[in-house]
Length: 452
Image (cartoon, rainbow, N blue to C red):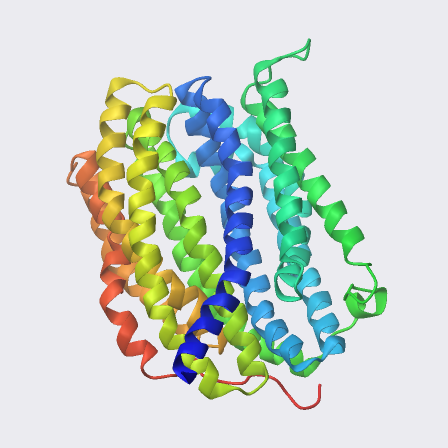
């Protein structure tokens, strides 16, 4: 009877956290996907160029993810402990670091967009479109980074519904703005890819202002001048201990995604277009995995902060069933979405040929990704075990998948689909090693301090 109650409570608590988080991830992805959807009806070059240009903001997001992710681990445990003063100090620390990163990437995208695009493709038409897009969209980076700090806290302190509302409104605004600015409706000049950049700025400003105002609601934690200008040695030390392996993990994984784009970007416009459309489809479906993994992390982090180690261990075991179920669901969703994107996008016959095989390959990839993400993003980091993900990505991606695909593309001149299959084999390689790491229970730790 007690076991049944534990199982019932686990699913109730996990779904209460994860469903809104998954919905928010989906809505946030739709902000980017709406650009691709609108541009997909314009020209093949536009969607390819914007997809490659957005790798810059993607790399910036890797740094902000490492910062917000590592600080969220500490905030979840201190919030579970009831120490709001420390939560406030951690939020201020998060804002300081994220602001520095955002300003660096703004400067790169605004001042040298053409050089950034040359790293990703050798097609002049894509470089020209992407450079113009980057210089405009760079202004959104600062607002994007700062809003993520506030959204991170909302996910922990029980305001997930509000973060979902913010994402829903920004999706609607983005789609409407895209429609008018990209196509030139209602007397507005047709700006094409540049119109997508302007709409992104509008969306990120709205999200940041909303988050800032919401942080000053009664009883909620918000930054102040003193917190932003000062630091705490012990918290900085705890943050760095978690952040360095998490940053290594985020960068290893994320830069590999950018390397994927660069490799495919040198295999022709058809391959690049198919790759871009495949990424749109998979990114929307991956939101389910990301939402549930984040929900599991928040849930376990709260238990560990309260020192309920036995309950956290029992909940960790239940995550196995959830991980397998989500893997199957995601593979099935891709089987449904795949034919829809095939019909929707305006692609050349060669690009559509590649698209079919990329989606078929991703049916297997999505299962492995979903299973791995539950533990490497959710369960393991909840107790501070961020090292495993960094090591696994380094070995599977940078020592196996990428070197082989690089040689296949630039030296052996392999067919596009062979390069793509090898390039995306990293999640499948990592899959068998999750169980041994889990059973070491390195993640089963209370990270809070009695005094800060």
